[in-house]
Image 1 (spheres, protein in one colour):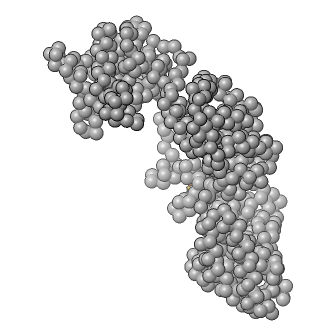
Image 2 (cartoon, protein in one colour):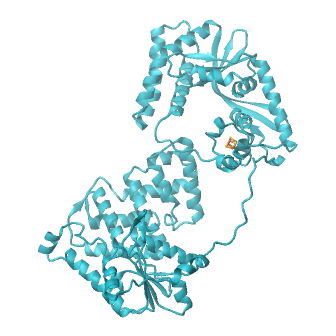
Image 3 (cartoon, rainbow, N blue to C red):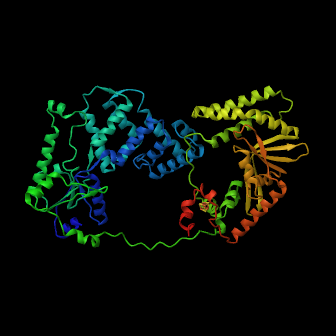
Length: 612
Ligand code: SF4
């Protein structure tokens, strides 16, 4: 408020001397809200700037075996591939992100290259590979050797082109050139991590000043005010902690060593600050000093030097005009319309947006919460999958599916084969599948042991099933079925068995225990998965096969006749889509158990209306 008053009074040179950087940032934000730009002489350390972030991200990616998060952050920076159209870079990074999440790949450039589908992405990854080759992380070089290699690799990435178009980037380029010149005679050799630490420290020590803003309001520091006159000075953050501040020692030596080396010691530095403050007071007529009087509920003392000044002048020098004006002087953001109370959303979808295909899991979502289906499958707002860095039960489920598919592909019928042979073959296939998993994560051994404990039980179950006349017929087959003229039900079945009478049975492998699967089927029609699979494959039976760690493999099926359930399930789907085409609403009526894991919660805003 005082700065605005000074400006209104025609002052054309106002210094804001920031003793406390945090307060300075807040003041700057407040001034910008009042549309007063400031000229910043204190600047920002390079380590906090986007131009350096791209540099450090690149080094992290190279050192961290191209961890996906580093690579995505790097490729999202506008400084990377700045010599290409921005749309190509965006296209490449979007594709990469999708592929990594789809295939659950967390690191390694070769893995990314294996997945790449488009020329843009292949080209971008090739550039990363070529740039990385210029930074051999296992070797040692002089600082200058590393800096030269860094520039070559950044050039391969187009970063130097990007920096050249940016004021901070141009200064960073100058800084790199300056370090190369200064270090020309240094022959010490450093490993990659040592050099990276040195570089990070340099970026932290050097400051960028934006000279593009010209303003009567200048942010500066005490030492920079020597022999300068201003129309007015605001001295920010002058509590006892910040004036004179912590000036003890240096980064490496204590005062005794510094004194012996002829370097300035703490007392001299304090003296310098005091001189600077005296000079500022002597040269400038108008000055306002601020500090935070109460901090965390405790009194926060004014700097002892300023207390001394008060005592000498026999005046507490308190400013009394500003406080009464404070409320009226607040900069208000533009008035926005008052928020309307929210109700449960229940949109209806335009007919042309309704999907023409639905999977059993989509159908399940529609039954669990129509609004979730609307957001996910009609508006297609599904969020991207997380890249899972640690193995979890989903991976385990995938491996078990693979093992059983391969096992029954080789041995469609087990009856008649010696049991030791069956156990050996199932173990062999299991080992082969888990060997690939272990390459990526050692913890896959744990899941392997878990599966090993179930193999005997699985063979028992399979042999008994064959005794009942069932034979393995197919695995991982895709089926589709016309629900009506405009809707197709489609899905991939884990496994299909057939018996000697020609009847079929669908098997759905689940890594869940028997009790939770039984719970799923308790309410007829609630679970649509088995009934949909039965309809898709025209099977008379469908069952879950529990492959949990209880060591006992068990099948779980509904009590009702499956053909009847399948027919009703299909009729219901047809009816629902008929209603949706007629404009029926899709309310957000999911139960709490469903909402707990719903990615659309932020969209339906259940938290806002559910309480009302
Ligand atoms: S949070 Fe609940 S109510 Fe909202 S969309 Fe998800 S499942 Fe439906």
